[in-house]
Image (cartoon, rainbow, N blue to C red; front, side, top):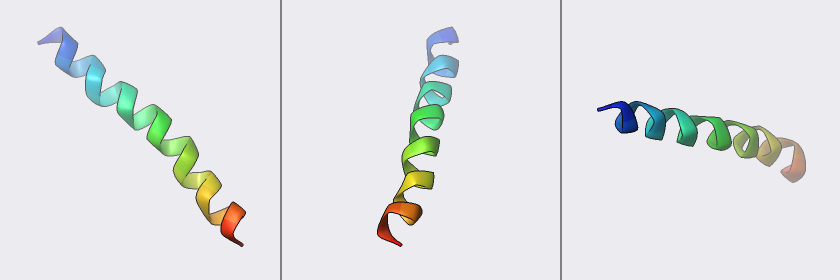
Length: 27
């Protein structure tokens, strides 16, 4: 159960930075 809690949090961290860099790069 502890491994599941770390998996969703680890994916949310890296997915946040790339998503914010996408709009500025296209503009």
